[in-house]
Length: 69
Image 1: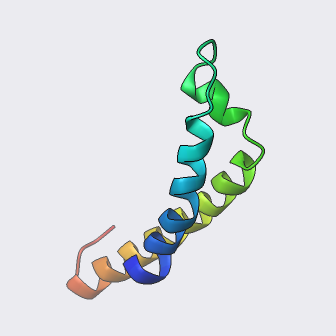
Image 2 (image 1 turned 45 degrees about the vertical axis):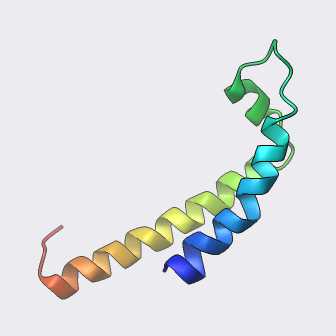
C-alpha cells in the first residue's frame, strides 16, 4: 500500500502543493489560499480515493488478525 498508494500520491501532490503554498499572499490565510488553487478539487478527489483505498486495506488487515471493526 505504501509503494502503490501513499508514495505515488505524495510524490505527485506534495511538491505541487508546496509550490502553491510558497506563493501565498500575506493577506490570505493558508486555507483560503489553498481553496483558491485550481488543482485543489482534483487533489481532494484523489485524496478521498486514497483514503478509501487505505480504509479497505486496514479492514483487510484487521480481518486477517481477527480484530473486529
